[in-house]
View (cartoon, rainbow, N blue to C red):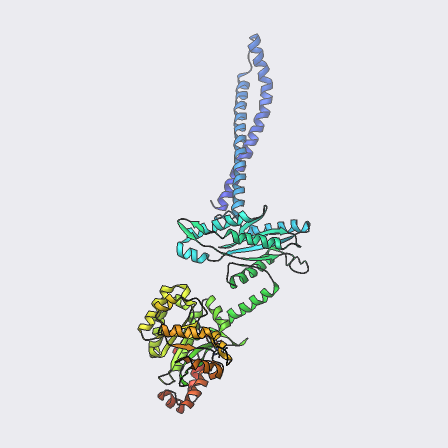
Length: 555
Ligand code: C2E
Ligand code: CA
Ligand code: CA
C-alpha cells in the first residue's frame, strides 16, 4: 500500500474510532439517565403489579443497551487493532535494522550499536575493538555454484561467527560478504582480542556443507580499536572512523595473501594512498601512452652472438618517474587492466621488432591473469597478423605461477600458440611449484633458469647444485634453456661449462629503449634491410613511432 493511501486509511479509522467513542459515552450517560427512571418503575410494576414504565422510555433504555454493547465491541476491536499496529511497527523497525538473509544487524544499525557499546565501555574504563570480517573466495563460490549456494555460505559464516562471539557481541552484515562486530576489552590486554580473532579462524577450519556442495572457506580480518591512537580523539572513535580503519587493516590482510588478520596501523593509510595513486596513475597512463617497452638482450652463450630480446615493461609516470614493472604489473592485474596494458606494449614491441634483423626473436611476458582468458591465444595471433609479424620470431614467457590456476586452459592456450609456430617458454623456473608431470605433459619449448639460482655462481669456487640439477633436468626433458641474471664473467664462465645455453643479464647491458636497441643493432649490422634504408633516409621517424601508443597510430 502506498504511503498516502495508508495514512488516509489510518485517518479514516481514527475518525471512526472517535465517533464510536462519542456514541459509547453518550449511550452510557443516557443509560444512566433512562435506567434511573425506567428500572425502579419496572421493578415496582413486577412486584406490585402497578403500571409499568412509559414505553418510550423503555425503548430508549433498550436502545441505550444496544449502543453500550456496540461501544464495548468497538472498544475490543480498537484494542486488537492497536496491538496489531504495534506488532507491524516492531516488524518494520526490525526489518529496517537487520539483514533479512542472515538475521544480523545491517550497516545502518551497526553504527548506532557501535556508538552504544563504545559509550558503555568507555564509561567503565574499557576500550572497544572493531573487527571487520570478509569471506575470501565469495565471488568464486557464487560463480562456481550459483547464488543460492553463495547465500547459504553467508548464512553459515554468520552462524559460525556468532558461535564464537562473546555474550552481548552483536554481529552485523555490512556489505555483500562483509561482517563486522564490536566488542569491549581491557586496553591493557589487547591479546584478548587476538585470542578471539584466532578462534574465528579456527571456526573456519571445517569446510562448509551447503546444498549438496562442500566449499572451503577462508576469511580475512581487519581489527582496530578506539584507543590505538595515543590520545583519545572523539573523531577517530566515531563508528565511521572505526569502520574505515578496520577496512584498511582488512585490505592489508587481503593484500598479504588473505586468510589472515591485521590490526590497523597508521602507516597502512599512507600505503593505501600510494596504492590509490598507482591505480589512478596506471589508468591515466594507459590513455596517455606512458607505458613503454624496453628490451634486454638474449645471447647464445657459446658464440656470444645476439639472438633476440626480452621485452620488459617500463612506466614513465609524470608524478613518480620511471616505475618498475614489479610495482605496476601486480596492480594492473588486480584492477583488471593488465590485458589492455599488455596489448599496448606488445603492439609497440611488434612495431619495434619489425626493424630488427629477421633472425632476432622477441620474447614477451604474460601474466597468469591473461591466461585465464580463453581467447588469449586468438587475440595474440590476431596481433601478429595485424602487424605482419612472423609467429616463429615470437616467444611467450609464462611463469610457473600460471600453472596453478587452470592447467587445462593453459595447456590449450600453449597448444594453440605452438600450432601457429609461436615458441612458449617456462619463465623463472625453480621458483614455483611446477611438478615434473606438468613439465613432461605441457609442451614447452624452453626453460628459463631463474636469476636467483644463477646468482649463486658468482664466486669462482661456488658451485650451484641447483643450476646443475635444473640443467640436467632440462637436458633429460630435451628442453633448450636460457639462464637469466648473468651479471659478470665469473657466472658466464661457470654457465659455459654446462653446455649449450642461451643467456641474458646485466653483463650484456641493462634493458634498453627501442631507440637504443636500434642504435645497437645498427652498429652490429643487424637491422632489417628495409629499416636500414628507412632509417638512413629518415633518422627521426622511428623515434616518433616509439613514443606514441599503437592505438593512436592505428587511429
Ligand atoms: P622477468 O621476466 O624475470 O624479467 C627479468 C628481470 O630481471 C627484469 O626486471 C630485468 O631487468 C632483470 N634483470 C635482467 N638481468 C639482470 C641481472 O643480471 N641481474 C639482476 N639482478 N636482474 C636482472 P624488470 O624489468 O624489473 O622486470 C621484472 C619482472 O616484471 C619481470 O621479471 C617480469 O616477470 C615482469 N614483467 C616485465 N614486463 C612485463 C610485461 O610486459 N608483462 C608482464 N606480465 N610482466 C612483465
Ligand atoms: Ca621473463
Ligand atoms: Ca624471469
